[in-house]
Image (tube, rainbow, N blue to C red; front, top):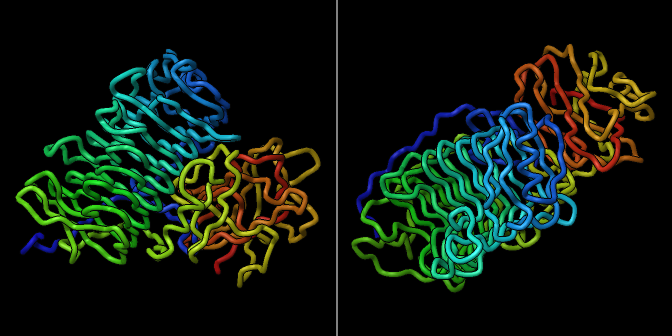
Length: 510
């Protein structure tokens, strides 16, 4: 056990974007800092069913920073992946290469997207979102090889990445040709891994590739399943990591490994059938932790300390005090296994915790948008519901938007009449309330009964600053966010199963 270690305060100074904290399905994590993570928001939506088509979509953009949403379906493998050249890309033939680019969302749709023996590599890139994909059996030795054996590898000056609802798995350990499932290296920062499954590998993932590489993070791991892994769940060198509401089962050698001055805040996780769930392992350079609300269940064992192996238990105590700059809601550790069985991993309809030991559908996975910095699910029924208290400020405001469908009007969303509506010219578009010039914190969106649930990805944006106030998949009846003074607020529809019809877009200071 560690003794006489100093208690210190870790402060992460970074800009943040406002997002809803009153709903249960908030996408929290360090990806919401440093200006937030919006991926391909507002960009062209492109379909891809081969690795070559993914690379072509990147290469066909006007610039390497032009936003794009790539909807992926089917099986992506070595047989259908090749290097594609262009001014806006830097691709490779043996992996999905997200290199030297920005503002990209990669999301699995339809029956699912499987990357079979083909890893995803993010290098020298910013503002990337990966959701609803399954990556399996990526090898560094044997045949075929890809991405150094990492399912998802993030390295070299990467900023703002959100990986959500993915399944990452191998079929053995290093001797079988596999490496890490989720590795972060070489000055990569502001990253979140959420609602995902990591399983059947010797190595879950690391932050920092050596004891001297301590320039990574901060990073968040929340609502993930770590299943049948030997170690590195994760291994954190020098970084700040927030690890909450995860489920650990079958960790065979060692668990969360805080070392080389790392600071990990470990909250409301559930561990079972696991050896040494937390500590500093295989090094003499200590790491630190703050713990609260964790459950160490059946099958958890603790080893004796040694000079280079110091488990935190069995009497687990905090050795640091670590500040987290974003808002988040904790599920009880006793609920987390049941919640994650219904929500974590690919092809779970982007479902999330409902905040009450259950789950709520995050909307269909056919959506092409992203939810950086905002509501991660929005599972409420959008049947109108009771209006918020206060005055609907939209009634005396003005409105505009993107191209509208024939016979509809922007003004229909602020006329107080649910029998009239605005509809975009396609399945994506924007409707805005403007000339507000006041503080607001709540909106109420009413879809017509015939199109209720059609929207599968949306964002609420402060037009004055571009900040995402909230976002999600299905539109909840009310959307709450921090008090924000603005003149114009946008409802951006990134994807829908049919042309949406928005009957009312109401704005309140609740």
